[in-house]
Length: 217
Image (cartoon, rainbow, N blue to C red; front, side, top):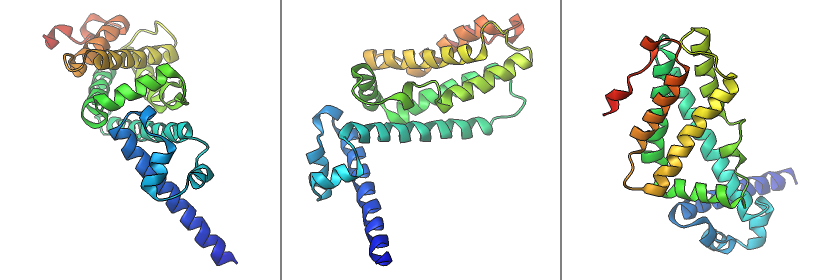
């Protein structure tokens, strides 16, 4: 009996993984709204009933895909920061992180996927807390950099660190949205860097700590 239960458990995990991977591919190739549960189950060769054993709904599956993708991206950002020189000024770390995020958005995620994510955020039909929530790891990363800059007297403590971190994330999110609106006539990396520099000019303690915005032009 135990062997049968174990076998059933393994088969269930394999089916769930298969559905997840098929949905991930389909949602990459098509709009979320145009892919339905039946499309996924037909591709997987299972019944719709079997789908609902593993996922409450299509929206729940989409939310899981987004959550996992965001978690992987934030883990990559954290690993990237850990490789930077420990004595690098906080302002340079922030600029480097912003550039890294822009590169990931452009080269790994891409315009089409970002457009779909923003569409879901605006529609509000899927749980996108993993993207927009203040508990996201990305806020923690910005928080840590800004806190270090304040402790080193590189930055002024003009706002609570939590609020400063939110402003930096809002900046990259706003520039990313503008990229989606103006694509392809919009340089995401240059504009994200410029916005970061503008924020840095507002919080740097001394004139000589301020990165030179004119270097962008």
